[in-house]
Every structure is written in C-alpha cells, then in structure tokens.
Length: 95
Image (cartoon, rainbow, N blue to C red):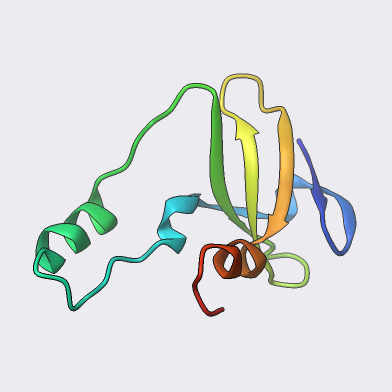
C-alpha cells in the first residue's frame, strides 16, 4: 500500500505505523460533568468499520510526522492524506 505523504510524496506503508482511529484527535473536555465516562469511551471503545474510515498513521521510518489517512478498510484504497496537525487545527484544537 502506498501512502502519498503531503510533504514527502508517495511512500510505502512499511515506513508507517498504524495508530488507530483518527477520532483520537478529538480528546474530551476533562472539566465536563461526564468526563469520566467520556474518557473511558475515548480510551477503550472503538468502532471496527467496513468501508471508509479516518485513521492515524505515524511516519516512524521517516520524518516522524502524524497523518490522518482516509482509507477504505475493505479495499485499502486511500482517498485522502493530511497532516494530523492540520486536521486538529481545522477542528479547533491547538497542535
């Protein structure tokens, strides 16, 4: 599988480590009234989707960047690759 890194161009997926669901970017508010439940769900509950899914990948054997890869889990087709910091900023989080 080839991942088209936004800064470095096409790279073999062997250079990367899959790190899980990209929803991990959206950490819960630790001050909310439901913080305990929210952090439990954030830390332990995961979907196992069939089809298009946003995933976190870490470029371990390269520039050590974090990416959000939109990938079809059935066909491994990649629709989009973005820097995780840009995705976090677009969601209102500081990087």
